[in-house]
Amino acid sequence: MPEGTERAGSTSVLVVDDHRTFADLLALALAGQPDLGRAGTAHSAEEGLALALSLQPDVVVMDVRLGSADGLEVTARLTAMLPGVRVIVLTAHATQALLERAVTAGACCLLPKDGSFQEVLSALRSARRGGFVVHPALMRELMTGTRQVAQPAPQLTLREREVLDLLADGHDARAIARALGISLHTCRGHVRSLLTKLNAHSQLEAVANATRVGLVRAADPR
Image 1: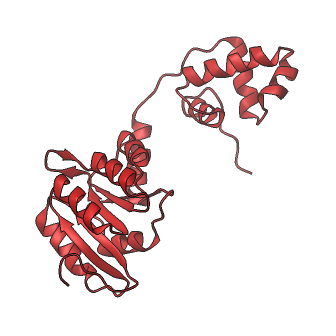
Image 2 (image 1 turned 45 degrees about the horizontal axis):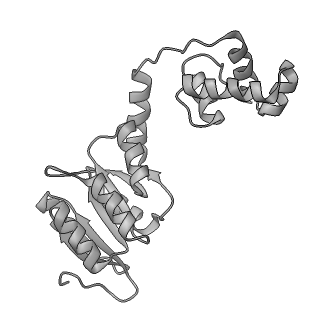
């Protein structure tokens, strides 16, 4: 199928990867799918941006590494300029930092570079803008890496420990304030302190992080 053409009613796909053999083989394989059409193939960040703006594909398959360029930076630019585009990111290795950057960039799926073609096809058909899916193999890699990094528990005051225990039990700030006999303003101050010490952005994340470092016991499964 010629570059920049697609079947009527199909999902158009742009492949951006500096590994020419991989990109060309993926694009060729897409030509055999009745519901997927090849919008184009790019081998650099500049070419990928230009083709995406010109062809406006439904989905972009983006490699994390594009020579000296950063595929996630390209992803962020694409999702800002093309609000409807869905970007599937390919990576050889997953890290927590890469995962967070992919989410921030507006990607909707993270797949292993050495995964199967069927997995790529499944992602092309199911990925949705606003959602984020991580391949199980990459998720296992992330979880293994998290367990290997031993993070020391932060030092909490006695009152902060009391507030944390009540947060872990599912109480909100008002209920905690009543239970401890302190003002709501004071209670919220302790919660803010906990978020800072536990490097969390929400109370739920604070409890999860506290559980991970042993400050809160994980609930027994029922």
